[in-house]
Length: 200
Ligand code: GTP
Ligand code: MG
Image (tube, rainbow, N blue to C red; front, side):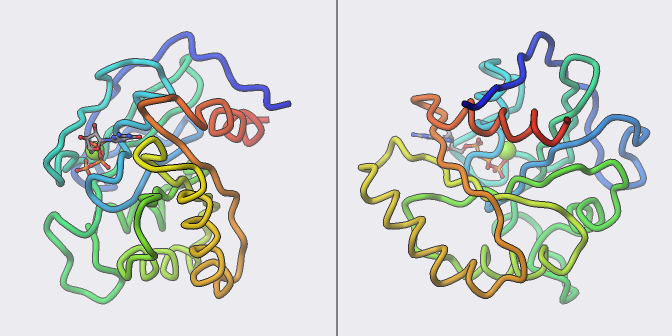
């Protein structure tokens, strides 16, 4: 049985444009990353059951800063700007925001990264490149397949299986996998259970 953490309090703490401007690294952090529009902010709202804690938009590129939300005064959820849409960095680290790269590589209290993947799509080049890069860092990560309400569960299963076969098989580490829907609340307990386990 999955025992999810109970969220009694969820508050917005601050937004930071760069790693240097992030709040002091005191609480364990769980970050959400993925292509713009994949549903990172929506997932944070689902986990916290707060309708508009994180800002959601139909237009990709909504989240531009690193946003911190403190839960129960003891740990944090971090909403990161998406990749694949907004300003892209010119260097070769990966095709995404510099501040996000710095954060994922160097944030000392970063406990876990949830990488969101659109459950409806075949493996996207940018997600594959991002995962290859992330696997070279020390970050511990898992995958979250989002928007499962938009198609049948058999299509979602096929999509996850294809991703495992074509992408995960080449990674040095096999991440945990979650399937979620911000509409139906699917996967909420599982993701919270994972956080709970990591918090010990
Ligand atoms: P950026 O901040 O631009 O990087 O996007 P994001 O990844 O934070 O996505 P966001 O949560 O803003 O959601 C993008 C759009 O997808 C919004 O219109 C959401 O309502 C919609 N959406 C997100 N998750 C789900 C889901 O599980 N099901 C459905 N049907 N729509 C979703
Ligand atoms: Mg967002």
